[in-house]
Image 1 (cartoon, rainbow, N blue to C red):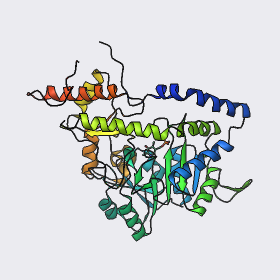
Image 2: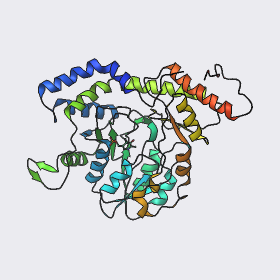
Image 3: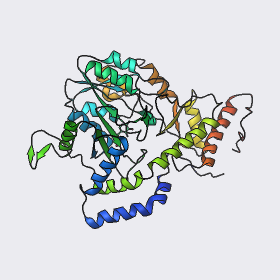
Image 4: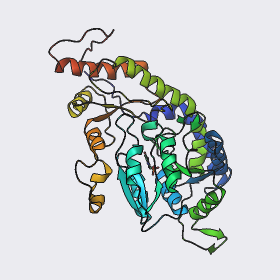
Length: 386
Ligand SMILES: *Cc1c(COP(=O)(O)O)cnc(C)c1O
């Protein structure tokens, strides 16, 4: 019995939908032969600044470079400490380390998987310069609590919003809640481009100027360099494609939310933990991540049934080899360490049909039915043919 694979993404299906529009803008860029800068970059920057509700946006090469450039613009470097969650994609901490500063890892909240503000407070020292909350899986971190700590200790706040474009916190968009914020257009992100890409958002005029200079080798006026930057420029063609994709972001986000709602209904009585949404905001479901104490067996069973899941993330950053010298011990961040062993992200993307989602859910129900001696009853259509 050969069933279609259901995976974490279906970019080919998205391209089938948007291909004509995308090929048309690509052709325009090719005809113009303007590959760097130009109206598409300015248009994408303006569109995202308006959407998020910030004054400035600076298109850059990647989400990672957005983080790096933000920290450089804030003057963070050797001898400084930056507080980051231990449960995030590597880039959050990698960017800190690349400036020469020290990432200081903090455990997460068990319900939202985001920075735990109480642990942030405990981690502040005289060397702390900034906090980098990550809006993980598409849900805002507890920004009021984090901003209060930052105000009290005169720290900067850089939001890592790579997974959360479109998410809100108390009716404000993520990306407008700190001193600067970073987006990623990596192809798998909610606003995924055709290659690498990122964006910095800020309301601070001086910071924005500095970021634009850093993006272009620190050039202040033509061939004059008062400090060292990099080549952090986004390609024109990628910006033109992102403008097409941006027109579909709201619809795609709604579709992700509908998929998530369907999972919540179908899996409500299963012995697993479904994502918790804090009352302050919403969730744009970059991932739909569940916790299961039989995670590896469940993932293996689903794979046999043609359902491919993801583990974000298997290792907390304080346990990564490259940060060994910082001296964090096993057990020092118990929540993140447990979550790394139990977390499983189910397919959750705009191209899934209701039938696809039901197939994933019914496979999960079958898995648990087989675990327990008593067959489950109750859920309509809960039986699975496999
Ligand atoms: C993807 C991601 C990044 C890095 O973005 P790139 O565009 O891949 O460089 C940073 N932080 C988080 C939380 C991410 O998910």
